[in-house]
Amino acid sequence: MKRSSFFTVVFENDHCIVVNKASGISVGGERWDDSAQRLDKLVADSLSYAKIFTVHRIDRETSGLVAFAKDAQTHKQLSMAFNSRQVGKHYIAVVHGRPAWEEMTCDLPLVPNGNKKHMTIIDKYRGKESHTQFKVLNSAGNYSVLSVYPATGRIHQIRVHAASLGFPVVCDSLYGKETPVLLSSFKRGWRGDPHEEKPLLARLGLHAMELSLPADLCGYKLSAPLSRDLAALIKQIEKLDKRRVDNSSLQT
Image 1 (cartoon, one colour):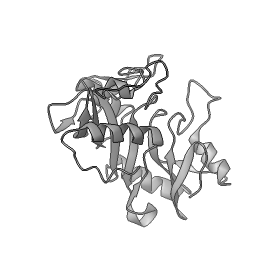
Image 2 (tube, rainbow, N blue to C red):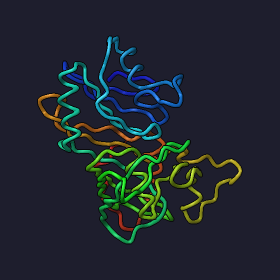
Image 3 (cartoon, rainbow, N blue to C red):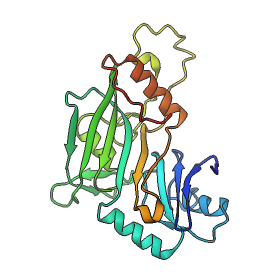
Image 4 (tube, helix red, strand yellow):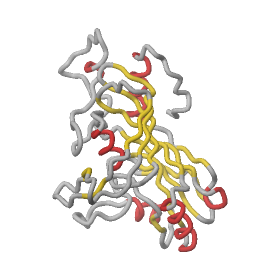
């Protein structure tokens, strides 16, 4: 697989290319920062394409799968598939708190509020239809690992819906707490040096793990392994979870 410091190619054919994006880089341009690096241009330049077409986006701070089309017709077909909810999306999130429920669906309507932080808000009058399904995988201390299935694709949808339920994604400076996650914060009897402890995770704990795309264009089901930091945090939570839920499907 082709790699760079910002992405790894997980699938490529004559129609499209799908990459595993690192946290910290935008998929396309940012209206408020024209000089920021952008994934679409990096992918095109790194692989010597004259142009690629952005089909969908995930947040700058979110890691995981992003699909690009190589031609206008494929771009149209994939965009229609996303807009008509024919694309399956599966995310992994680490959140603050321990839900009392095993599964929960949030359908609060969302709309960007246009403030300087570019946040999305819940608005039952102006908001667009939004649906996110959450499933608890593991919990330890005051953290939980969730499987997340967004049916719609609003800006910051998962982050806002998770926070609205009282379980914000870890290291989320917009909708929760930016504080890094330390092993000492949830492992009882931790005996390390608090002055030298390094965080398990210091970036948004959200990863776009799977995409189910039209089989005739980009293969049916694609997956992206977790980054090392997020995988390490989830492994520690799994070890300390008395329920021992089998998460063998999580690629590390």
